[in-house]
Amino acid sequence: MRRRSGRGVARSTRPAGSRALGACFNMRPLSWQVVASAAAGFALALEALPVVLRWLRAGRRRRPQREVLFFPSQVTCTEALLQAPGATLSGCPCSLPHCESSLSRLLRALLAARASLELCLFAFCSPQLGRAVELLHQRGVRVRIVSDCDYMALNGSQIGLLRKAGIQVRHNQDLGYMHHKFAIVDKKVLITGSLNWTTQAIQNNRENVLILEDEEYVRLFLEEFERIWEEFNPTKYTFFPKKSRR
Amino acid sequence: MRRRSGRGVARSTRPAGSRALGACFNMRPLSWQVVASAAAGFALALEALPVVLRWLRAGRRRRPQREVLFFPSQVTCTEALLQAPGATLSGCPCSLPHCESSLSRLLRALLAARASLELCLFAFCSPQLGRAVELLHQRGVRVRIVSDCDYMALNGSQIGLLRKAGIQVRHNQDLGYMHHKFAIVDKKVLITGSLNWTTQAIQNNRENVLILEDEEYVRLFLEEFERIWEEFNPTKYTFFPKKSRR
Image 1 (cartoon, chains in turn brown, red):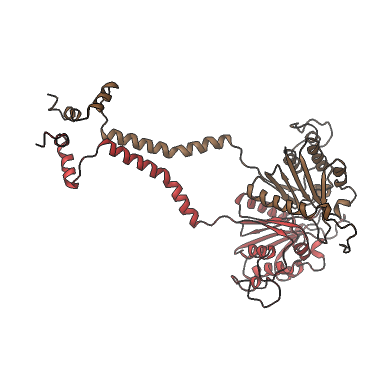
Image 2 (image 1 turned 135 degrees about the horizontal axis):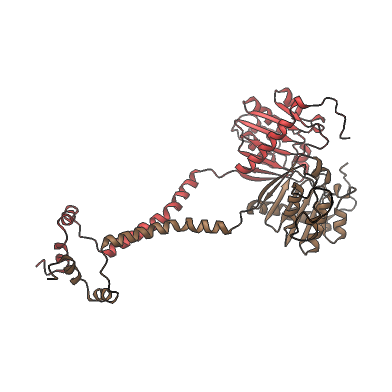
């Protein structure tokens, strides 16, 4: 009787091992349609896997920092930012507004530094930004500053204070200005733009600052910083230069 | 004899339609191992397809412009760039080097404009950059310039010449400086940095310029330009302002 049924005949022609496997799992052998459907399903699942993984990863992964700050900045109180890490802006009882501003965003970007801070600044007179840099130095962040020889000597410049606090500062001696205005936070985030770090510029001028978490740009600006840092090594200073900018 | 062979028996037990198909293509029926292998191969091919397509597309698609220019720029001849579109730098017989420099790269980025050019510049004295902007205006590119009221009046400023050539210029009247130094080419490429467009800055200063083909940044800077453009509308000018910057 079994030989007359197609399936029975087909089963009887399978090798003994295969028959034993079928018996062991109490299964009928799979038809090619089932295998093909399973394979197609597998193919589709395999296809969807990267999309699902990317979606899951995107949920967990932080988007790289990309921000543009425009100035003049509203004059706000930034005391809380400069006191305790992670403090909110509402802690100070002064009469200034305690909301976010371009300056507070810039301070936050700087104060995020945990390991290193490279500063390449034409003019640095803002007391708030000066305090932020000193705070980072006190927290053990390795701060290095390059500035312009004329502008670092102006009244109100933060450079002298930061030098006294123990931060390394180097400057140019050539005829051209060291006119960069950039910072590199933890060798990961570039802060650059038209803004000189002065209260006049922050509160009155039309300025822009880009905050970019971008490997390629950070690498290029870090290379520029290291080039300048090496070139402005104090062992190469001329103490009585013949030429003057003026 | 055929019934004694396992394969022969299996074939004889298949439905008539299937037998006809087998006969038509002169094929033996597929075993499930073959079907599974084919499906696995199909799955792998399906998996590889997006990678291959992306690779093929990347070959054809231009990478968005991302460039950083550092200054001081080597002094080179830029005549050929300012004469005919698409000309090489070796056309001029002058004694200056005819190679690429940061200035020539900046000129190329500007001269790529076909429809519009927005300039928001604190100081604009470079004759080469002035000629490039005038050339674009002559080619029918819509050029709009915002500048600083004090610096546009300095000796050597290109603003007066460009105004005479028919280009629209607007300026601030407030106490703060219009200290931006950015350009937007065809509403697609942003050129921004620390560089004032002066020969002193180009040839002597440490400066940086970022060239970014980035939709998000271009949108933000274009919004800033339009805000300033509207705010500096000549109908709102005060001709005898009470306050002075000095």
